[in-house]
Image 1 (cartoon, one colour):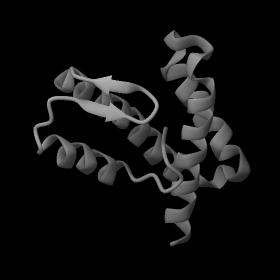
Image 2 (cartoon, helix red, strand yellow):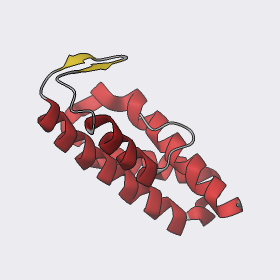
Image 3 (tube, one colour):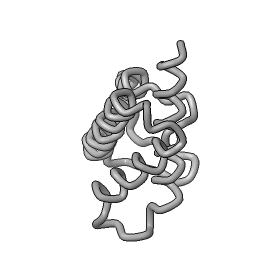
Length: 108
């Protein structure tokens, strides 16, 4: 889930920083232990890429105002349609975080 202060570049740097320690496993707050580190990295970077696309799209469509978050959420739901409603709340929160970050950057 994208934090409210989402920054796609820093998110990718965080992945690199963590994996530089060459951990044998990762303990995620809500998802337990991950021991398939390389597969997790590939999946995470793929998903960060999708979110980065939405962040850049949001920056170009900032004029949507209050509808920006809704449109991002719709875009994400299309990208993750194969998951059904499983990710509904996560995608809603991701959209809000991406929209907030894009708006914040616009006003900076």
